[in-house]
Length: 370
Image (cartoon, rainbow, N blue to C red; front, top):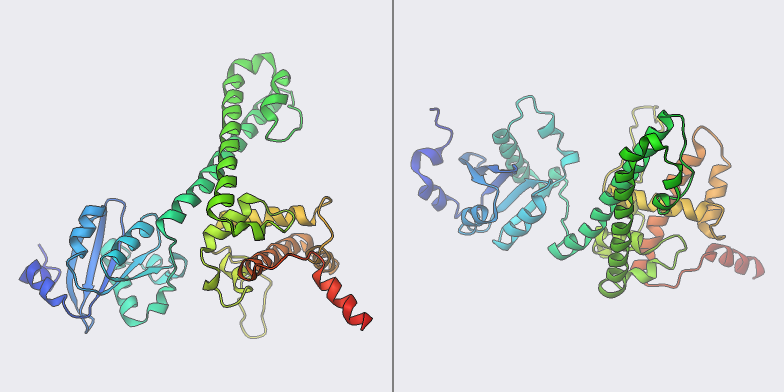
């Protein structure tokens, strides 16, 4: 068998002695087994090994190691692993997977090589990893309530679409109604030939609707009792407990951003840039950051800009933007409004100000009167 490293030749005890210096560790997290690569100060590999991806195994492996820099890649296990390693006294860098083309486009890609690449990037310059920040365990658990609700909503939508499709294929049509009232209004419209097949689906839809109501009550309670800061965000018509709580839990600390405008880019609502010479094509948004929060912000913008939305600075700004015309003008303007809404919510969160829907209009009138 080929000898991979000095550690395998000299034994694990000698490696532990070397680890007393300032080293760099890269860990490629796997679902069951993770690969570990340790570099010395000169960038030489002194250990390549495997460890089980469990709390006990990782703690045993890294608790005795002196404080060092550890790089891992963002993924399913990275939140709890990063907290565990930080608890062991290490500096943990969680690499942004979207920025790691060196890893996911490597033609020699394997777990061992990925671990080494992470270690070398962390040793050279941590900024090359575009490190991200994981929220704490308590907020992650609270955010799981929102994630679970989204999963149930998606399941209900899929069942409703399946029922409509099967009825349409038999020449029938179920009545138009909201998803909340679907199980109450379509029972009589189900063809007799399909009743045996669709009644169990209708019962499942009814059960899912009740589960969603239960999640809504939990979210409302969390917003009012544990995260009272959401109240200042809910001053904006169209932003309810779900969007406000998701915003607070996703951003976690508003002081992370030096400018409110940075929030739009953080949530993937900023257009991509790909300039080259005189070419500057119009591209879509980056779609970085949290997908669910981005979707909620777009939904809130839909309401604010819709027929039932109040007269606000945001609405007037959006109407001027859509007047420019062009292909997909309204769609692009809606995304821009969602980005502006994110900036507004962050500003309200930081300052705690009372929301004025027509603040810019009032300021303009004051200047004109003076």
